[in-house]
Length: 77
Image 1: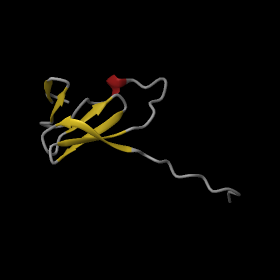
Image 2: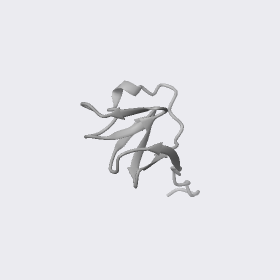
Image 3: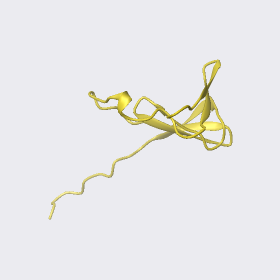
Image 4: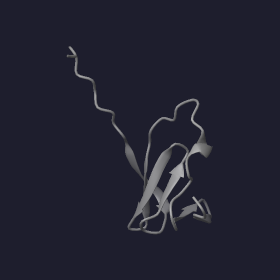
C-alpha cells in the first residue's frame, strides 16, 4: 500500500485557431489535434527530450487542416 496519493496526470486540451475538416486528426510534435465543427483542438503535453517525431504517423485517414496559409492533406499517415 502507498502512503501517499499519486496525482492523476492532467492533459490540457487547447482550442486552436486552426481551420480543418470535421473528423480530421493530426499531430503537432508529440501532441495530437482533432477537428470538431471546423475548429481544431490539441493536447498540450510536454514532449520528452528524446521524443522521435518519426516514430508516429503525422495524421490519420483523409484528415485535412490549415497550417498558416496552406492546407495540409493526410497521405499515407
